[in-house]
Length: 487
Length: 103
Image (cartoon, rainbow over the protein chains, first blue to last red):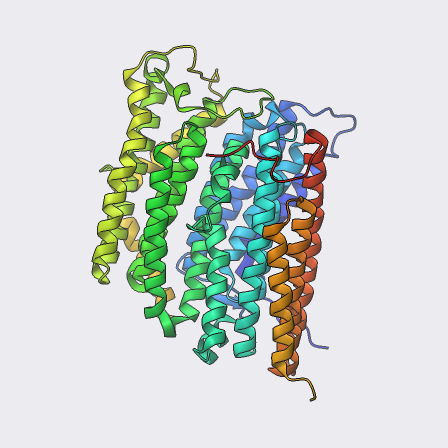
């Protein structure tokens, strides 16, 4: 029997992360009678961080190279490499947040970081898969790891509840996803996206299959009306996990959605209307629900639904124009959203409460207590709201621009109105930080640990730099998008 | 071939809908999980039927079905662990009573 030739260079970054995950898992057994301690946890986290950095270097080294693939199942093109960079960036920032957050509530550091890295691997594979089985398996790798991570704070009732809800709805959505995959397989006799594109009949099986796949994606992207789990899960999960998955899952799922939609290119005109309606619903619902939240994490959860809606505008605009804008937005979103979650993690009271998450009141008078932190948080929030000259502004600008150029003018207008609405709840927090006095409801975990400080600094620098160098960066991403759209 | 493809598809669709109904109607977390498993296995029938009738020369459908089984097993393991962990702290797995997070 001939074994198929496998070009392992296609998955170098993934292999590095997998190896790191294994090392991290075994690190628990190194050193006899070693008791779990913060130093031990930091050592494990450092190994994990090194693995992420190495994988990112491997991904950067591949940029610009021609696309290679493994048996048409996984492809290493620039789109996939940029996706890996977004995921690794989000993972590294989330890991820095967990650095001192994790020892507060658990002693199982190896397990946490190993699962975390496996979730990263799932996301990276998902953005690179060009075949439905690979896509499904990578989707499940990331989902199963995230179910456990969500419920990692075992003593806390909210965490368990969030994990259960995430699990039940996630498994439920997987069923739709594979039903869609089965129908496409029945239609074309293949699970490779290339063959599906070539052989799709365009009849009932194709349409139903794609619709069911879209439902599966909708759950992962937290698109209204498939968003019900999002606020609960984001609120109940440990904040570092929330920060990481809000960016990583979205990035992976959006890139995979682009790949699937390219396979469905024949009926793109039909799909774009559905996507436009979903985008409108998602933005509007997310922003309106965020207006009336009193928990910071829940507010950011609804805001992340809204941001998924903005990115759907880019998907609606199509491969040529929308893809580079979505990629740019994902980078911007990674910096500003994780930055905001980093500050929120400092506002949480430690301990075993039913819900220990920070309310908006915890931010009261933050400027008087920690001026720098308040300014940084304000910048993250303003960037999320889309205020120039920050990264979030250019992200939205490019998305709306792509919509206008592809003829979706009303969609761009809806997006702009939504940005204005969203400014209200971002500014409400800013006003509380700057214009009110600290009272008994305000809280700040102190002292600020170096790792969290580093994460906030990186996110801050990224938010500013992406704003300043928006044009050149978009061009870079545009080349990757063009290479993909032309392929 | 005596049995046409559509019969298999109808059975699969019916099973999928039964599982779907179970997920929506049941309040016990384990029963919901059973509904999900029913949905996954209904899809497996689809895969095998399509493999046999559409392209029997390539065993893609079989392979997909095996992956779905493996994933379903992993999900069941994680899901039951979560349910046990919740039962230990709350003494209930009725999802109507697990309602701390809302709004």
